[in-house]
Amino acid sequence: MPDEYISFEQIPFGSDNFADNPEPRCPCVLLLDTSGSMSGMPIAQLNEGVRTFRQELLQDPLAAKRVEVAMVSFGPVTVESDFHTVPNFRPRDLEVTGDTPLGAAINTGIDMVNRRKSEYKEHGISYYKPWIILITDGAPTDDWTRAAQRVREGEDNKSFAFFAIGVEGADMATLSGISVRTPLKLRGLMFREFFLWLSASMKMVSSKNPGSNVNLIPPSGWTEL
Amino acid sequence: MSWNMIGAAVAGTSHIASGRPCEDALGFRLVTAGNGDEALLIVASDGAGSARHAAEASRTTVSIALGGFEELVVSVGGLTEASVYTAAGAVYEALSAAAAESGEALNEYSATFLGAVILPNKALFFQLGDGAIIRNDGTDFYTAVWHRDMDHYLNTTRFLIDDPSFPALKSMLLEEPVDELAILTDGLELLAISFDTNIVHQPFFTSLYGALRIADDGLKRETLSRRLAEYLQSDAINSRTDDDKTLFLATRI
Image (cartoon, rainbow over all chains, first blue to last red; front, top):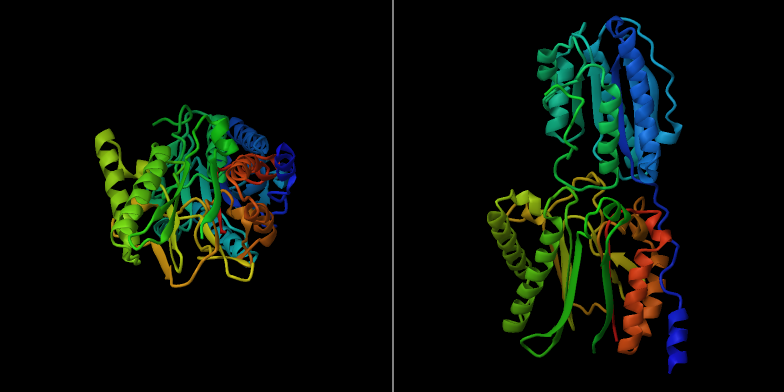
């Protein structure tokens, strides 16, 4: 009798032949202000923060495969990096350039997210709710009313989640007029701490954390609120 | 006529890493219906990772729904699609009571709800939120009772407590014998279903059912139960998903 059970134990059970699905994707767009006022320490710290973001996500095997980062600088509005999974997201260091076309930058970010979502659908890739992260230290130098309207519509239709982060000098009142979620003010130049928080939030989302709302880790340390 | 069945719900690696318990729950039992027929009841639930009482919510969902279905099947013997709403209503009340008692928001008790009641010539399936119910269509081809909705985000599934009128609840009553079925939570969807075609990945199930069909005594079924739990925690599976995962398999003998 023991022999019979030993042989039953040997019967193949469970295959390692799984459905060949692409990894689900978690898109995230960074809209980064590179206007003149960011020169010096702010831009250096911002670059350091982006590197930290990449490094942190790389250390999480699932997030590294699932999170797709795109990066847009303004102004002028420049797509620094289209959507790439973390290992292939290799942005160059940002330099300060011109003014602050906030409206145009937001419109570009929303267009990119919409396009990426159609690509996912076309290829049968499942995905998480996209995130758009805006970081700015100034006041818009272009018309942002249309962008604000699209942010509101996007949040209402659950098309994406939009987060606005103000650096010292940012026009927080205008940011409040754009973002449905309360904009957060960065304390000093704590970009590194902000990006640590962002990567932790992305890791949480990309490891499937169901919930009818985007559930963020509470911001701590890096915000003035 | 009876069933060979096994099932397991195990914690995902992300839950283990962050010290959270397994927030999936699974329950199944055989009962005798009012008319003497044998009825197989299965309920599975996946507690929301963002909900503070996810583990309690999924356990409560399973135990209350199983009890509700048993009462319906035993007393009346007449199973209808309305039975699903009755059971869901009982779960909603239990979760509301738990929320009231703990003073927490109801959405801290977010959990999915899916399963089946199988009678000799009748099958009732139900599902609210993620996960999949798979059946043998009679030709040894495995097919999902409901297909995945590609339009929704992975992290925005529906939960039973979302709305007491259950607009997202799907149910289906089949007036035919179902001889083989599987129920899984979304931790395994990526491995068991091809998303681009929405076709069940056959090799995933054929190997499991091959062994289950010949498990003709209690000891063999115990062996398979253990091997199922080991399989769900194997590196092969953990490298593809870090979520909790539940798998139930039954074959009529």
